Structure formats: C-alpha cells, structure tokens
Image (cartoon, rainbow, N blue to C red):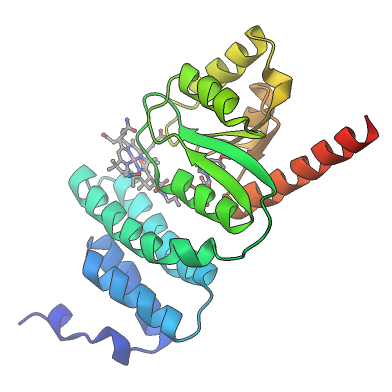
Length: 233
Ligand code: B1M
C-alpha cells in the first residue's frame, strides 16, 4: 500500500488538507478533490475561498509544470477534470446569492482555443453576482458571439483566450462588431492568462478583467453606467 492511500483527508487540519488537495489536483485525482472540497465546505469555508485557495492555487502549480515540460497534455487534462469536479460542487453555492438579475452576458472562448476552466469560473461568479449568463462554450467563431448577443439581447459580450495565438481573434470579433455598426450596443469584456490591460485597450474592448472577481466588479460598474446613461437620456 502506498503512503498516499493511507492519507485520510478528513483527519488533516485545514492547512494540510489544502496542501494535499493541491497534490491531488496535480495528480488528477477527481474523487479526492470532490472529497476535499466537501470537507472544507463542511468546516465552514466560504465557497469562494475553497475555489481560490485550493483549486485555482493548485491549478497554478499545474500550469507552471506544464510550461516547464514536467507535465504533459494528458496529465493536465486529468487535473482539469479534477478541478471541474470541485467547481461542479461549488457552482450552486457561488450562484446562490438570490440577487435580482443585474444584466445578461454571453461568454465564450474564442476560435482555436479549447481552454474553458477560467471562462466557466467567470460564468459562475457572474451568476453568483446576479447576472444571467449564456455560455457559448469553446472555439467560437465571430458569428457565434454576434448572433448570440443579438438573440439573447445581451448587455455584455465576454471573451476568453488562454493562448497567445488565439488572443488576437478577440480583435476580429470586435472589428466585425464595428463593421456591423453594433459595437456600442454591448459592453465588451475580455480575459485570459496571456492578456493584459494594454492588449484590452489596443483591440477596443471596454475592459480587460484579470480574474473572475474583477470581471464581476467590472461588469457591475459598466452596468451601473449603462443604467445611469439610460436614466439621463
Ligand atoms: Co493549455 N496552455 N494548452 N491546456 N493550459 C496554457 C494556457 C499555457 C499557459 C501552459 C504553459 O505553457 N504554461 C500554454 C499557453 C502558452 C501561450 O500561449 N503563451 C498552454 C498551451 C501551450 C496549450 C496547448 C497548445 C498544448 C499543446 O497541445 N501542446 C494546448 C492548446 C489547445 C487549444 O486550446 N487549441 C493546450 C491544452 C490544454 C488542455 C486541454 C490540456 C487543458 C485545458 C482543459 C480545459 O480548459 N478544459 C490545458 C490547461 C488546463 C492549461 C493550464 C495549465 C491551466 C489553465 C486553467 O484552467 N487555469 C494553462 C497554464 C496557466 O494558465 N497557468 C495552460 C485556471 C483558470 C482558473 O485560470 O484560465 O487563467 P484562467 O482564468 C482566469 C483568468 O485568466 C480570467 O479569470 C479566470 C478566473 O479567475 N479569465 C477571464 C479567463 N477568461 C476570462 C474571460 C473573461 C474575464 C476573465 O471575460 C470577461
């Protein structure tokens, strides 16, 4: 029997448990991540803290080793799968605020890009903050954003990209919105690890959002402005 099999998660203190969950995420152990998530919640942890301090922090380590060639796609997929299992438990809790709907967002990962964890997290946090969220999934061509935004009468178009090779596609979407004369009908928010503020400005987005919490704050700010303008006009 290996040492790992001897570990009983519920017997660890919070700090040890979080460290163990990071190891388990690294090893793609879905059941253990589910168990650890539930234990932290039972101990009174806020869902957002479980998400950021255990799951997102664990995925950051995975990302470093993926970058450095220590982990490869199959292992990272397992880690992603384990992370999603934890997020699945947290989703209803993060969305449970009962706040009145403050706006509607369509969000998707851009064409050529299949990373969806960050985008899903943004969607969850936005729902938790009272936004209605329409998730377009991954690998979205420009027409998906434009059609969905019109059909859903969205306030916000959100785009996610995790690759330096796919982030320029965000400009393709915004340029097409400009060409169709609909750019100013929507608040355009962009995010993803390789982006920054300067990039957001350079492509004509309304704002770059560093993480899901910033996305929520930014969306709220822009919605408040939109309502004020409507009231004034
Ligand atoms: Co990929 N991958 N990956 N990958 N992957 C990265 C992004 C990479 C940085 C890893 C590395 O080298 N360190 C690197 C990109 C390098 C670059 O372009 N500069 C990379 C690469 C190279 C690749 C492949 C090309 C590998 C290959 O095949 N050789 C390939 C590409 C496939 C494709 O898309 N066409 C690939 C594949 C994969 C997997 C399929 C194995 C898997 C994805 C599984 C999935 O998503 N379902 C995967 C993963 C998991 C990662 C890392 C390890 C983790 C990404 C993640 O989920 N982070 C990643 C390394 C890293 O980013 N550290 C990496 C956790 C998530 C919560 O954070 O997504 O940043 P993040 O989202 C944050 C913010 O960015 C922001 O809020 C989120 C929450 O706080 N945000 C938004 C994100 N979207 C937003 C949208 C908004 C607002 C905020 O709209 C308003």
